Image 1: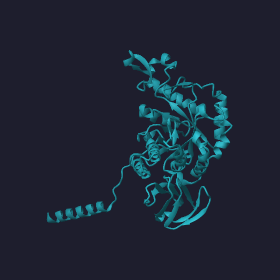
Image 2: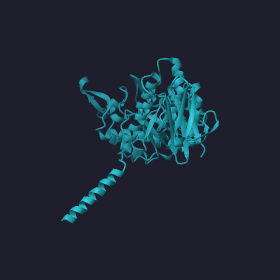
Image 3: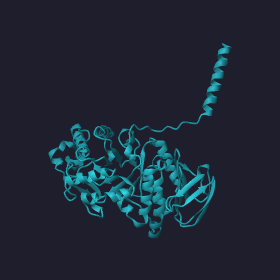
Image 4: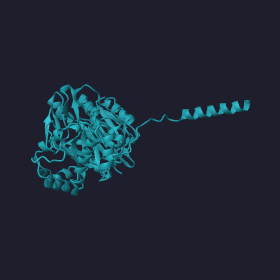
Length: 420
């Protein structure tokens, strides 16, 4: 009996010792979504046809494809092309299988998509599946597809009833139509969290029987990534940069966003980084600061872990065009940027400076940003710093040791690309 107690005590000691020596494992959700291989190294580029400066038609986009590709763009996100209404800044579709004639014909749409694919690019479309336009004929033809608005005297509302399986089939068939018959490569789905996740899971499965698709959601819930979506919006990232620009937050607040993403989202989940999207636009109170801080903010958006979305209007801002082009091209070529982990480099004493590395196997990128109107002299100490680099924007070759002093002008941005 004593011998048994002795061995039990010995087991407890060894067990506790082993536990003490192990690092605590962090739980992280798991996604079974298989990103299309073509999506991994491609930046998303949103074009609102109504604001496209070269013309508001499919042909006007087709004629610009080579120029768009030369800017390093791989995925075009086009605004919804169906007939619809804009109500309270929300677009609502009248006919889910129709094409708004002001944009062109079905043949012109097919030619545009074929040109996109011929250039080695891909194209996805905005999708509004929560509510139809109140002027949609579908409300009168299929009233059981919609919820009843009891507060309005039991009138049929324009909000789709996803409890109706027949209605779900209608919506699923519409989504399949644009992929199978027209050639689209996926969707950006608005109001995604207001639609049952089971519908999105089924949609992903059905669309992938046609071709690999890229699905993006304007929602932020981590469960969207489980089986349905490749990418979700990171409004916290946008809001933080906005607050930094306005002087309400320090730039190192971004660390909390990254920690939250790592804690709550699957490692493979793409979080969408942007400075302008849909009804969210980058703006601070002082115009002169706005113009200057946009540059480091843009570099940060393009190099922070996640997938950048560029709005067409931002890309054509003269002071930002070269930044977008250079980093978009680098995103295609360098796995450190589209798949690499991020490592913060020793916290500078100056809280307005943000420095980090992106690493993937033999690939390495160092990013240095000054979010202030003051000249900053900082010293960075990190073994990750050591190496030979070329600065992306100046094309100047440099060699760093594990410690390096940097002089940063106001609103400075540096991207150092390591020799492989």
